Image (cartoon, rainbow, N blue to C red; front, top):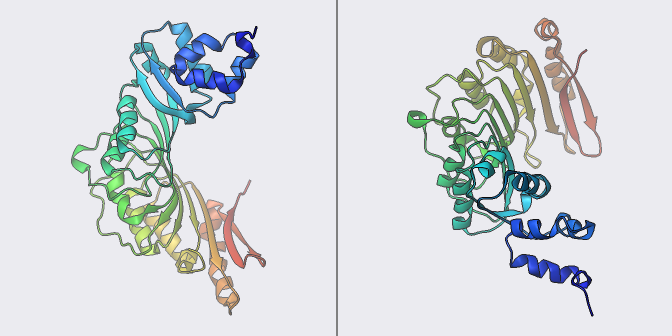
Length: 337
């Protein structure tokens, strides 16, 4: 006679498919190490459907399944007050194309009364309507949000109704210059902004901020195709109270249009007049030299101006290096102790 534990892992996974992940966890997880491994090593998506359960069981389920395997969550339904309270941080990977599915997930997030940190990753082929982004931004207790807006249409301006609680915003993938002002109109309490691919090709900044962003103190931007003129206006409008600024400028494919960022006098003027509270400044400038002629003399004259008294007083020091294999010339800040 074959015992229950002699069944194959594949059969147990089929059994789990007929159960909510919580029921499967509660029934099998504590039997032995084999069943614990079935949960830990599985690639199956998790359906979280929790009604009224004991606090100890919910906490155990949260610690062993939800937290370490949050990217596998495909749906989220919570009907227990304690279940709402234990979700402080959540990472979700959304791979499904159906926008109704995405909306159901977002609707459930509004039930998490203590959710303060949210990271959402969308698959490349997922097209998300802009109203869903707006809903995410307005999650009531959210402080940290990491998200991609690369497929989002332009957000409408929200100056009149800005109410987001987000203080730390990380934008992954490409984020277009045209979206910048409208996006920031939603987050008046923003303290830290990180943009990992800020691009401006075929774009132009057409509006200016009417508000003062006194809370924004840290900015980290990697950008391409953004003119120094546009960056100057952005800094003028938003960076007056910034204390730490990290900027990386890199060429788009093999195009170069960024030598203006090596103008030390313009940086000095920008910092002196528009960012009086700046204490930490890190700059990394990448330039594709290619196989043609390159004006090394002019380049040397440009970077030499970063050795003036202004930079010395602030203890902001720079150096450069050249990668012969990649044909990339890099000018960058170096840490000074």
